[in-house]
Image (cartoon, rainbow, N blue to C red; front, side, top):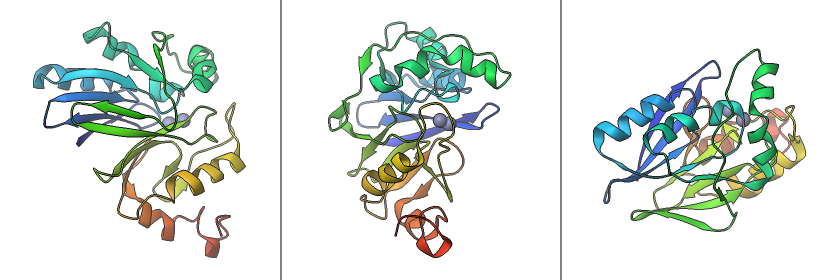
Length: 217
Ligand SMILES: [Zn+2]
Ligand SMILES: [Zn+2]
């Protein structure tokens, strides 16, 4: 599996193309402000787009869904049902930030935690990791040594929990049970900022390390 990163917008959101190199089948994960570039990449390289997968429905992670649909009008859009409310309210949330984001095409499929999502010869395990958003999921491939974790954890930080549906205790539980249970060498592709590894965050993330007052003893 190859991961290509597309970063942009006022929030510096990372959208990702996850590509099965054996089959040229790909999925678009969290198409945000740079989704038009993502769509251009799909078209110029002749990749076969199988789906849009969303870690959660905050505006910066979904504002480019329509750009992906523009090149692939029937491509399925996968979201955990607990985040449908956020998805539908995107225009109001954008207004809170003084931004304008149009309503996006309706999600077509429900992500089921514990299930596997296959594309080409690749697959993701769907892990439920609420706290930053009520229906937040992560896409994990231990075989490929990587996870797309959205806004659960970042290099040296964790997702904010002050937005509607956020909860700090729930987020810390998600990190403890769904991130820190992964092998140290797993690369974490995050929703904002550079990628990192489980091992790096386990020992160095001030929100997670007891020495710095983090609550994951
Ligand atoms: Zn978010
Ligand atoms: Zn975000």
